[in-house]
Length: 188
Image 1 (cartoon, rainbow, N blue to C red):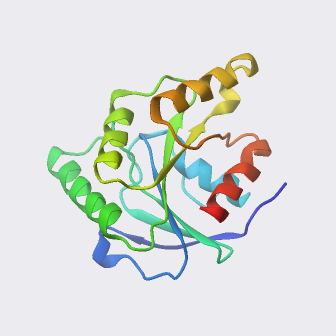
Image 2: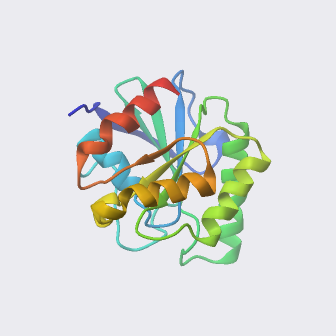
């Protein structure tokens, strides 16, 4: 199985605090608890690189991870459920919009969708926002280890029908999907 060494670099609240990298950058977008941190940990084959939590809304900054000097993944706060005030949510929205639309290093967004459920209203809203800004994106369907094998293909086809473009399966518990995802990140 193919892995890249990865390390945490830095956290930033907003674009002006983001460090300059000469590497392709891939922000992870997804609902709270869709598995963004677990995605990073599985790709790095390191269970404690990115902090995971069963409590939604724990990621509150943009966290940057360097994968063997080949690319950067940025872990963003999840959208949807978070026990914070509307004022803080609006501040996050402003900072993230600025980061996603103005950061020159971003090669493609990675939109994570939970394979256990049909896409939610806020998944569609995020995708609409991405399309309004004409940002490059591909989709990763997470938690595929929870989807019965007999339904896996239909789940992927449904997400592809709804969002279009490249759709890749992923499981934090099973590394069989790593190579396709790493290949997409290395060639995007």
